[in-house]
Length: 284
Image (cartoon, rainbow, N blue to C red):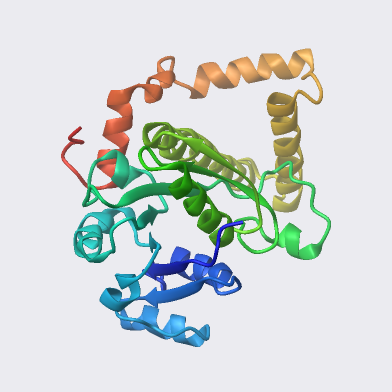
């Protein structure tokens, strides 16, 4: 167990800032909450937390969590990093800015990234609260993927302790490189998985509005078969029928580009992250 820490949350009134602050507030750590926007400050206070100026919040912090949007991490880190104490850990929640080298750096400060996996579709849930928690960080357990490419083993343990607290309940923390984490998000889960989720919604709309199938029937068929499709392909629960395999081949021929796997190349990773961060290019 890691001893009690001093933690600063920058952007504590934002969506993720509020989520992780809710969990950190339940720990024995000393936590300071910084938020610039008036609306965000009101949310922090409404949650029963005190708003602290950034300079004071980070002065003695062992871990500084930058819970701000990716596109703001450059200027925010440029303001915050010079103020943190030597040996502190600066923790961001997404890999894009770290991969794009947008974060302000200091040789005597450690940097880590940690992104939640969200509760698995195959997670065994037993309570209504666990079923309702699809995002994670409330009742349903989730894994976290983290990266910390420099620093001591002790610093990694400290970072993991905070990661487990702010994303709780956590099953496991998987350590990878920043580049590998960038290939997980956005490439694997946003470029592919989230896009497919959006495509499923469009297909449901077409089935209802264009074909005329009653919405409850179409939704019931889609949701049930989505679970079967994931279980059969990702877990190997059951084989698809021969007729289904033919239909799957037709779908792949009709919908998927032959060169789609190019998204797993470095130049394409640079392209999507540059677009996400509104950059002309990624400078390595």
